[in-house]
Image (cartoon, rainbow, N blue to C red; front, top):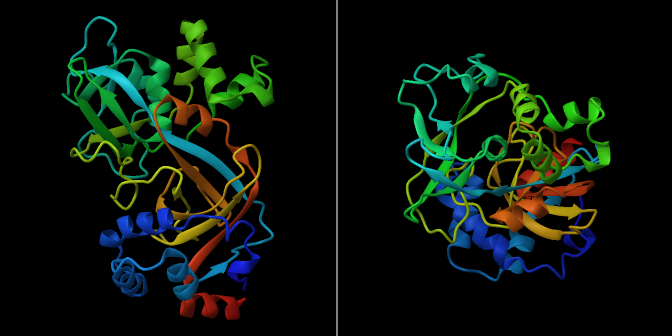
Length: 315
């Protein structure tokens, strides 16, 4: 088991932001050990003392290569009713949809299979914006009157996701190193008909739910139904990393993060002990940065001391 002195960058990080994110998770945590630590965190302790005293870092599956990606909360222009440029609907889950059971595929829905059922939440102006909003799983809609609607993940249609980027690479349309979200957006907008057809080849389709209004300065709600913190929240595989746990990340590449984050979200493509999606923030700049994150590195989960020692002895 490693100590905090074994974490490069630990002494330079500012763990107060991670402590605040940890406290955000506390109302949703049922684990007795974490609940006890939440009571300590509520007393506003010194952040570094808190983590070093009550947790120990564990490097889970060190032989598995780490893979980090980034995600963000889009903010898109939208309207409550179709008309003019607003032609691409976002849907609530259909009644009776069962998790994991394949339902209508994206191509069928895009051809109007759900029309007339009153499932539309709002309409967007751009099909590629709709597609990437579904990839992110949450977002903000800015209505014509300036009001804000927040959307969270509602359900998925049970079909596995098929990579649009890989489809474009396989056809020789894009080189592998250039198949970023920004490049895909530009290609679809420059080639509307084949672009929409390519998007429809991904059978996966995400449905949304409208969220209660909360502080616009906070991020979207994650899997714990608690607001995410830009730069301090990440999505993990809960089969390996408990939700609510602090996680130390060492991210290679341009991002170069060495910081403490908190596991507050999950994702359909996030599988494994060394796989994480980093929440970058809200809006276009965050989206541009998130789209560049496809890096290796290392991640260690911080567990309560007793649990950490038991797991270490088990190894």
